[in-house]
Structure formats: structure tokens, C-alpha cells
Length: 207
Length: 196
Image (cartoon, rainbow over all chains, first blue to last red; front, side):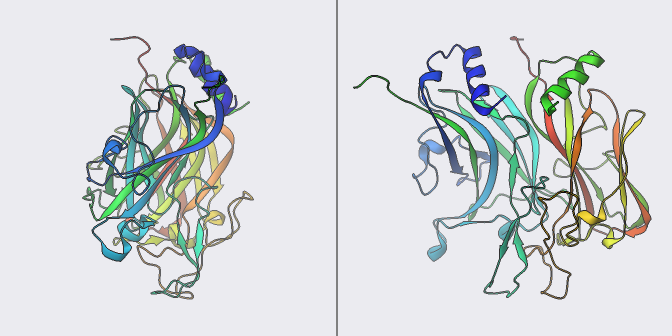
């Protein structure tokens, strides 16, 4: 089953007969937990676009959908932090290699991914954790330092967020060595993106 | 046969329900302060572990939950959170036991650290450096990668069947921090098809 087959299969199950006529595309939605609430996307309506989020609400409009194929987490430096405000960075630089994010994805009333870990040292995917090599690191001239990827690639096909259904990511942050919960910092904020095959609204008649 | 078909096939053979929510599943378990030992057994002890150290409460999946293991990941941390070479670079083997059956047997793992660069699969690059040559490894400056092995067949953990992961060596040093094992792949979680 391809990504597009899966979208049409779910659309058919949900009675969304017009989805097949829409524009297939590639897309990603992102948001940052600026309130340190432990939820991402649920407060998107209050966030600045595109500095913090690229969606105005945590649901897609009519005839738009996203098949989640990759979930990624990243850091964002808070707006209060002077010249670095709004910078996107790797979470390891703030929380270290030993953090683990344990997250759920909730679509409507349903938890579709549960207790999924994202490890600070890189997540369990051969393809994903090959990482990026940082060269000429200013404060530490170490040309073999890695910035590990904090992503989860969907096995099989992915999970569809249908049109007009609310979705959010719920997460907690832990120290995997001690098991202690790490307080979520409002200065070193945590963001999440959902990437995959997107369906865009397409008017087949002129308006 | 892909992961979805294989999981459906095995669930069907075992008479397990086949209509759960399809998802990507990552199970993980931590052993704190393992020290020097010849055998590590993951997914055996859940006593005292928090949700940040394991996402299971017993060594089996719940009713109506099952998954395919596609990737094994093994990580070792020092007490301050710095990533370490797993088992201090000694040769080790991993076995996965599901029910009464060994489904992965004595698979060598040490080639697959990012530092060694001899990984089985072509996609795992020759990454990492020996500590001390290119600067110190710190919690926020990682110069090696965890061990990761992508399995070539789809190994199923059915609902309500005990499983464990065993790592064997000759007195490997796992330090006083923690070691973590994660199993990831396609899975199914409970989904109520109808309203309660």
C-alpha cells in the first residue's frame, strides 16, 4: 500500500468522497510548546506564524489532510533570549544525550502512537541516526561532533490526520539514566513537526 | 511479504484480533548501573523504572497489541549522560527470545557502533571517532553513535507472549550509568472499533 492508497482507503472509510479529487502534495506542520505545557499543536492558534507554528489551528480545513510519515522534535530558543531568540537548534545542545522524550500522538479522541521514545543520542533507525557532522564548532574545535536526529520514521505507511479533526502531540521529558522527569524549560522550548504526504484543497471549478 | 502482511499473518495464525490501530511502535527498557557483567537481560526487570526508562510494565505486550521488530538499538550512558561505547568496545552478541523460541541468536553487535564503521547495512555510515583524539565526548558533544542493527526479516512479538533481549559477552564493562535497549517497528495498539 502506498501513501496515497492509504489516504484514499481511510477517506473512503470516513465517507470523504471528495478527497480523491484534491491536490496530492508533500507537507509538514510544526509548532512549539512555548508554554511548557507538555502539549504541542493544541495551542497553535495562539502562536506566531511562521516563527513558532505554521498552522492557525490544530486541525486541517475541509478536504485537507496529512499522512504522518515522520515525526521530528527540535529545540527553539525563546523570544526572550536576546540575539539568539527564535533560533532553531538541536535538542541535544540543551538537554544532553541522556534525555528522552516520550510522546503520544492523539487524533480526535484516539491515541494513534503511544509512549514512543525519542532518545537524545539519536532514535533507533539506522537511516536516521547517521546524523550530521558539525565542522569548525566554535567553542569546541571538534570536527567529529554529531548532531543526532530526533526523529521517528513511520514503519509501513503512516497515520492519516483527516480533515477537520483536532490533533496534538503530548510529551514528557525524562533523564533516561536516572529516570527523573526533566522540567520543560520555557527558554529552551521544544517543538515538533509532522511530515508526510499532504492533501491540499483544490477547486476543480473556477471561482 | 512486508511488515503489515507478516503481522496480520502471524496474528491470524495465533487467533489474535487483527483490527487494532496500526502504528509505529518503539519499546524500550533501561538497566541502571549494570557494572561489569557477562550477561545483560533487557525487558526482564521493570521494578523501580520510570516512564523515562521503559514504556512497558511487564515483559509482554497487552491484549490486542502486537508488533514487528525491525530495528534493535543499544545505548550506554555514563552517569552524567555522556554517550559511551556499548560494552566498552568488547565483542558482544545479542539474542532475542519470544516465548520459548530464540528468534535472533548470538548476533554480533560490536561492528555496528558508529565508531567502528563496520555496520552490516550499507546505510549506517562510518561515523564517530575514538575518544581523546578529536576532543572529549560530553553530554552535549557526541562523537559516536549507539549500536543499531536493522533486521532483515520481520520478527513478530504477538500479544501476551513474554519476550526478552539478552546481550552476552566476556565480562564487558557497562559502567555505572545506564544501558538502554530499544526495539522498533510496525505495530498495532488497542483500538475500540465501537463506542463503549
